[in-house]
Length: 133
Image (tube, rainbow, N blue to C red; front, side):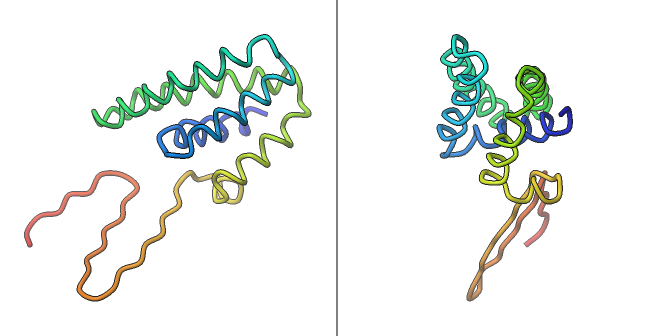
């Protein structure tokens, strides 16, 4: 359960920085409603706050804060799974939908690119330093 909570937390925080963040918010709210219906709205609000924190951290290049947010959601998801282990199947399904490579390889990075003509394409999972032209 700990590994699942860890993978899920990573994907959740990553997805909160995307345009599809509300899908994550809704899906997690639904999971919480099954176990703690009285906390679901609070969890959804906290996801919105986490989104704001993630975006601010990314703008500042603050990966430490982002990792701290992953840790927070890992703990929350671990406790949720401990309260109802049957949610593990649904959480795995959600992960597969949100980030197919996470479910298969345990990584949270998927990169696709297409270039044509005289285009130059650069992809990186972290910092890129380009010197000279």
